[in-house]
Each structure stands twice: as structure tokens, then as C-alpha cells.
Length: 334
Image 1 (cartoon, rainbow, N blue to C red):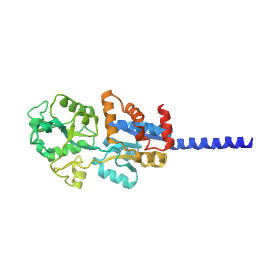
Image 2: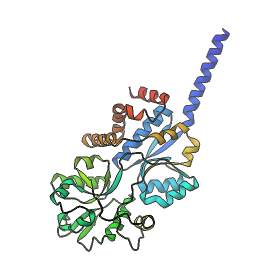
Image 3: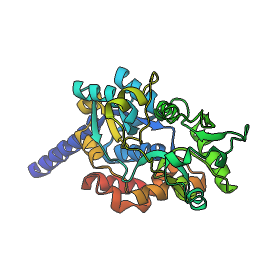
Image 4: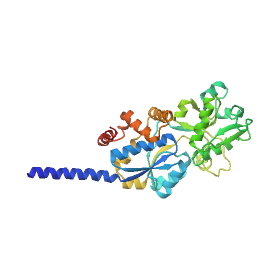
């Protein structure tokens, strides 16, 4: 009887410890950014944190500048899974130094990069064009739909960090004087739609984009060499990425900085295992590309793609979590 009672007592302690570990994770808010890869990543994080570590996760809408500003000033959301930080170098560095924000992963997606892209057939049909410098001398190849006498260059939607950089580079290369008009696509959907419309019709297109993405793969978009070196980091940080840049100078695009950033509150109040997960969570380019194609072909949400990823790429995500968490997640997917 004494052994039985002791057994029950030990079982009770184990249960309490397990429940305490789950409770320790607590509430977590994650930014669900307004582009496909970030939407997908946020939903993968939600599944893993909830099912593997017992967190209570809320996804909240986000964009580069607004999410960073909110995290930096209000401490919400707790996590930005895919924050492109080229335009945030100075304020992010200050926040990291102060300890209000933390960088848990400096490479959440292998092969991620941004810059100016054109369809591969544009370069094949115009072999004399090798670089951005060559290309901007030929606005006639990219006629604007409202004024065909001008070339159309597609920048970033308002609210994206890259909008300021593209606007400043447009001025730095004196593109307006060379016959170009800067087009604001209005949204991620507007940018994607412009690319798809042009490529489906066999028309040239020039603008900002990034990879890996389903669209870049589907339409054979090529990231252009600039034909000029990266100019100066100070000029990039303090002029080309800023709203007020009096004298922008030509430069190639800076090395693409993509990070997973969390608040100090997350580090202090949530399960350390959840933080460790973010440090290990790196998406291979082929898996990410496949999921983005899945989203595009099936009009699937980030949540749909996350479930597909968890089922099809178990060998990938199980490397990010402990054995106990992996077993719990697998059980939840059955």
C-alpha cells in the first residue's frame, strides 16, 4: 500500500512538473507579416510553440516598419519571425545593445536575398544588358501602361522598409531624367500581380523583389547584378534607407539581413526552450520554395502551408526541437 501511495505521489509530482513546464511558456504574440513566406513561417512557429511547448500563441498582422516600431516602443509582438532589417540597422543595433530586443536567428531562410529583378527572357533577348547600369539606359524596353514613352520601375508598397531604399536608388541613378517612372504597386498582391501579368504576356518587367519566392521560381526572375559596387555602409544606413536622403549616391543593394527578432519580455517570461527553438529554426531554400509554390498553386493560407510543411518535412523541423516536443507535435498532427 505504501508503495502504491508513493507511486501515486510521484506520478502527481511528475504531472505537476509537466503542467508547470507547459504553463511556463505562457502567452506569445507573433507577427504574421504581409507576405507569403513570413505568413507561412509565423504559422509554423505557432504550431510548434503551441503543440510542442504548450504556449498560447496569438498571430497579429504585421509589416516591416510597423512591426519593428511596435516591438521597439511597446514590446508587442513578442516575435518577428522574418524581419528584413537592412532599413533598420541603426535603431535595431541600438535596441540590441540596450537589451530591449534580441536577435535569435540571423539566417532563418537559406538563400534569402533582395534587390532588383527582371524576367530571364529579358536578359536572353537583350544580351548586351548585363547589369542594372546597362538596363536603366533602356526604359523603352519596359513601357509604362499609362505613358508608353516612359519606362516603368516597380518599387515597394508603402509601409515596407524597402520603399525608402528603392525611392532613393531611383534618384541616385537619375532614372527620372533617363525616362523612367517610379510605380508604387500598392500592396504585395499588386506587386505580384504586375509581375505575373507582364510575364504571362511575355512583356519585360523591372522592379524590386526577393527570393526565395514562388513567383521568382515560376517566372524565372533573375536578380540583377548592379554594375557598381556597394558604396558605403554609412551612406546606406544614414541616407539610402532614410526618408530624408538629400544626396543619394549609386550603390548596389546591401547584403540582405533577415533576422528572427524577439522582445526582452519574451526572453524573460517564456520557456527558454521556445527561444532555443528559434535559434535552430532555419528553412532550407528548397523546402521554403516548395511551400510558397504550394500556397500559390492552391491559393492556400499560411496556416494551410504550415500543416503541409509539418507533414511533408518532418525530417527538417524535428531537428529544431527536442524529442519530447517532436513527439507532442507529431501526435497533434495525426
